[in-house]
Image (cartoon, rainbow, N blue to C red; front, side, top):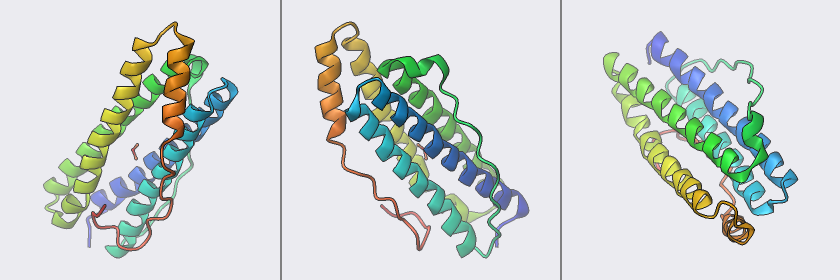
Length: 178
Ligand code: FEO
């Protein structure tokens, strides 16, 4: 049984992950409109991955005999960053850094509440955030290198098109596993 504070924070994280999915779906649409289908595919795959993250929190709350409480999902904000591929990936990096902070805060809370199960459950997300930030940062760096060179941009677009589709369904045990 988890404390009310931990349960509320886990429910809030479901909302953060669903917002992440919504944001990546909006970015996918922007990339398609920019004529960059590989970027569109990459963001769409990330959209599916974020749904999987939300699902892990959802399943975990239920496994711990808790109540899932779903809130409204905010409108995704991209603004002027939706005008370029670099702007889109810079938005992604800033967002992933924000999500990493929210996972770390959640972990701090679990420890403060002596909630060992949630502390262990969150390990998977800590590792996932390291990977997500690193892969997004690599693309940001590459986009900076090819600025003003359309050929470079099209090469990155082809590379991103090769990303395998994310596994959408992760239901079942929410405990950390790959
Ligand atoms: Fe679920 Fe991209 O963090």
